[in-house]
Image 1 (cartoon, rainbow, N blue to C red):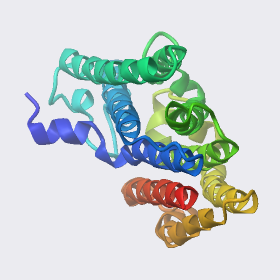
Image 2 (cartoon, helix red, strand yellow):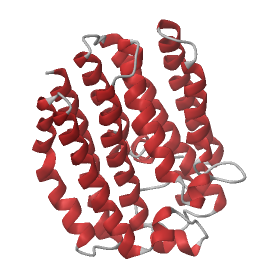
Image 3 (cartoon, rainbow, N blue to C red):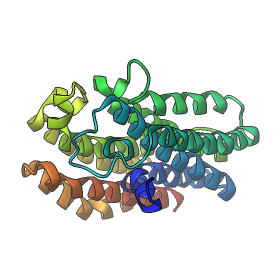
Length: 289
């Protein structure tokens, strides 16, 4: 039986900035529209965190029963390592999705019921990443869905439930956050290219190859900061606060563009997560100001 520490590690806390950053940025955009509502922002955070933990456990379960986690370089996988039964990990994923659904229903009741459809699509996408008969994560579409749900949907949805509308600032902020959320996934998949390719997992990194994946990572990071500049030029000069996060790009970019491989890429995932969190916080603060 897995220990509490192993369950926490299996939830992959280093990926949680991908859930927190969109809520920070979206709440900042709501504040810029003079409609920040703290309790709705808190519910959005619950939804985002529960979805992120749920997708992590779901990936652990689906990859584990497929045998694609038999040899891993990265963090502990509960099923693949044999420390937890697949059924227990699947239950943990479903419970997490249930928490997200309950918080999401409360938000829908307080704003608009069509959000139920968005929430259902998010849960379906979370499961379908590596689950089901044709997981899209095995076909190189993971980054696209991360951009859509942890970028556009999460940021704009957070703004909508508070302000009652999607603003232009929230869309641009969502693009920036989505690009960095994709960078987190790219960093993870870059590390796993050899093992993923050997088991037929055709992630975007596998399809692009090692060198082009490294440059893709750099482009995603650069484009995200371009979005902060675009926000400033569109009437939100305080959004340039996001540039204060630029020093956090040094370590991940140096490792990725320097050719780091295997375990040497593990700190890149953590560093990119920190960058994403700082970016979401600073963009949100800049918009609020």
